[in-house]
Structure formats: structure tokens, C-alpha cells
Image (cartoon, rainbow, N blue to C red; front, side, top):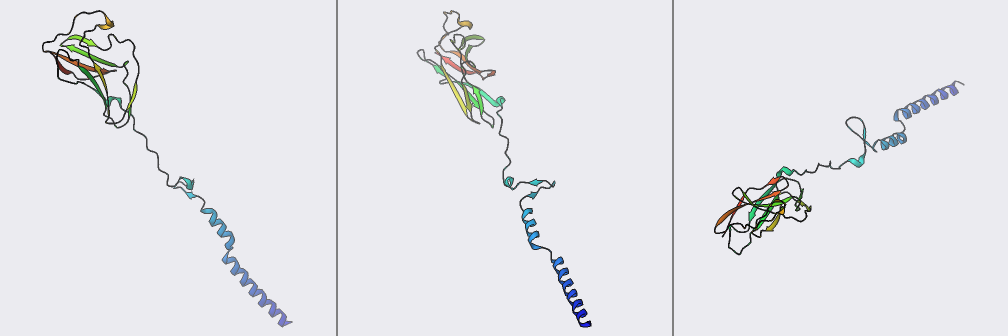
Length: 193
């Protein structure tokens, strides 16, 4: 009987040690599953979950905006002087000096080719214009668009009134100014012989 009690005590002692060892080792199947679940999202610095799909995506940068104050207008003629039978070609050059493309209305509704002799208004392309139209063009940064007008060496009046006078010749000097909307070029000087 003493021997049976001794075997029982030893069995309980060994069983206790095995139970304690198993408890200290933990359940590896359960911990592995929990660890797998933890890899499905990352933690943001503020503690919120950050989806993995957003990792590596570039932040969009705002596109540049057109600055119409950097669009300039210049006037030029194809020659500095013209013979009696030659017609001057007046040119308006519109340049985008900004860093973004600009849409500019270069239609006859906005353009004016103006010829002066001192303070005397000789000719305007708007005086006898039958109809005006819009023509919007996209001008890239640093690029230009040019509009040309062949002047018939005639005088005009506002409202296209009748005028018989002709511009003088014999070496007379004239100035040409190009206008586009509220923008005005500097003067281009030329001579009629």
C-alpha cells in the first residue's frame, strides 16, 4: 500500500511538471495565426491603420497656372521701308513669358492693327471690320503666336465713314501699334516712299 501511494505521488509529480512546462511554452498554433493577422496592415505614426496599397504612391503635385500678366504683345513690320507699289505687312506677335500654357483669344474680336502718323490716326483694322470672331489658341511657355495683316495704304475712320484722303508718301514715317484685348505693344516705325 505504501508502494502504491509512492507510485501515485511520483505520477502526480511528473504530470504536474509536464503541465507546467506545456503552459510555459504556450500554444504555437494560436500565436502564429495572430502574428499572421498583424502583418496585414501597418500602423501609422498616429496609431491608425494605413492600407498597404497606398505605400509607394507619389503625392500629386499641383499643376502650374497661367499668368496672363506674363503674356506680351509686340509689333513689327516685314520691312523698315516700302516703295510706292509695296504694301506693308503688319505683324502682331503674342508671347507667353510664364511657366504654364495659356489660352489666349487671338480672334478679330480682340486684335487691332493701328497705324499713326504722329498724333494723326491713319488706319485701324477695326474701323471697317465686317464681323468679329473669337479664336482661342493655347500658347506654351516661352512660345509665340503671330498674326499678320497686309495694309492697303489706305485711311479709315471709326465706324467706316467715307474718307478720300490717302496717307502721304515721299519718305513719310509712320508708327504701327498692335493691340490684343487690353494689351498694347510698343511702336514699330516704318517709312512709306
